[in-house]
Image 1 (tube, one colour):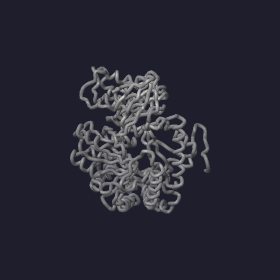
Image 2 (cartoon, helix red, strand yellow; image 1 turned 135 degrees about the horizontal axis):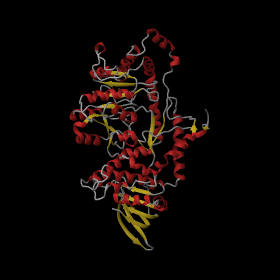
Image 3 (cartoon, one colour; image 1 turned 60 degrees about the vertical axis):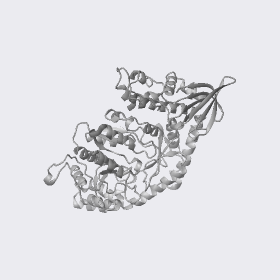
Image 4 (cartoon, helix red, strand yellow; image 1 turned 45 degrees about the vertical axis):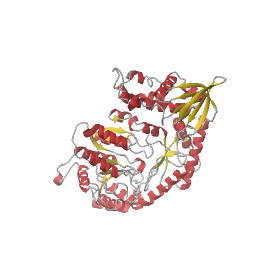
Length: 568
C-alpha cells in the first residue's frame, strides 16, 4: 500500500505502519518438520520439540544457568507460579503487591491463584513499581503479603538483587512478570532473569518480540522450583500420574515448540533491529519525556513516550490524526489497573498519582520487524506535526513557560488543597474553562497540583466524606466525574455516614482531583507554574497586581494580573 491509508466506514484505518505487526515463523515453510512431528505422533505432554526448545533457550539466552519451562501462555505461567508462591504461606486473604502500570493479566493471574492484588504506584522515570511503595506495603501488611509481583515495564530489566534482599528480609516470595522482556539483556549480555532465584515469566504471544502463535516461558535459577512448576502445568502429576501439587493443563503443544525453536534461531537479529529502531526514536523525540534508559539492551515491542501535560486531554485527536496518516498508535497501559472496573472492585488500591499522570499522557508508537530507520523518521515527523497542529488548534500554551511581565487576567497563588477547592467550585459552576481561556496562572510550590500536606496528618477532617465527594459527583467535566470510581474516591467513600473522613484518605483524593483539574485548565490556556514560590504581590495603578515569583532554579520573574487569588 502506498501513500495515505484507505479510510473505511466507521473510521477503520488501513495502516502503512501499524503499531504491532505479528510476525511469527511461517508454518507453511516448516512442512518437513511438521511431517516428522506427525510421524512421531507426539503432539503435547512435553514432547521432543518442546524439551529441545527449553534446553536451547536456557543455553542460548540464559547462559546455561538454571532451567526453563515452556507453557501454553504467559498468563497461565503467572497463575501457576503465583499459586506455588502462595502455597508456601497458606492463609486467607493473601495479598500480591503489583504496580498499577501493568497489563490486566498480572492482576487476573493473582486472582486466579487465590490472591488479592495490592496495587501500588510506580517510579516516575523507569515506570516500574515504586521501591518506596513496595517497602511501605511490606511493613504495613506484614504476613498478609503472599507475593511481590513486579512488572518489567515494556521489556526493561529490574534490580533482581533488591528483590532478592526484599524476599529474604520479609520472607515473602517473588514472581516477576517479564512478559515483554525476552531479548532484553543485562550488562553481562545474558537475558534479563538469568539464574534468578525466583520465577520469571515471559510471553511468546504473536504480538511480542519473541513471536510465536501463543505461549510463554518460565525461567529460574532454582531447578527444583521449575520441576514443581512443570508438575503443576500437568495437573500436578508426579510419578505414576498421581497429583502431588495443585495443577491444571498449561503445557505448550509440539506445534508451539516448533514455532518457538524456529523463532529462537533468528531472534538475536530481531532484537538488535528493534533496539536500533528504539535508539532512533530516543534521538528524534528527545524533546518528549519517556521511559528512562537502562543499562543493557531493552528489546522493544513498541516505543512509549509522554505527551506534554497540556496535550494530554487531546491525545485521542493526535491518535486519530496519525491514523489518518497511516500510523498506528495506542496508549499502554491506559487505563491502568486501578482504573479498570473489575480489577478495582477485587483489589486493594493505594493512591497512584504517578501512574495516573503517566497513564493519562502515554502514547505508544510502532516498532515492528519490518520497519526501517526511515520508517521511524516518518513516524517522528508526523507525530511532531500532529502535536504542533493539535497545540495550535487548541491554543494551548507551553506549561511552565517564563511569563516575563506579560499581563494575564488572574493569578492564583496556591495549587494545593485550598487552590483545588477553588478550581473545583469553578468546574462545578461551569466556569473553569472560561477563566482559563481569559488568562489564568496557577502558582504552586509543590511538584503538582492538589498535593499539599493534607494527607500527612493523622487526624480526621471536620468535613464529611460526602462533602469531599461532591467535587466529582455530577461534575459537568466527564474526566472529573469519572473520578467517582477512582481508588482514592472509593477510599474516602468508606467513611460516608461518619463524622469526618481521615485526612490520610482525603489527601490522595484531593491530589488526584487537583491533578485532573489542572489538566483541564492547561488544555484551555492556563499556565501551571509548579515548583514556583510567590515572593510578593503589590497593587499597581489602574487596579492591577504585580506578583514576583521564584522558580525552581532560583531565578525570579514577574507577572502582572487584573485579579489575584490567595489560596494557601
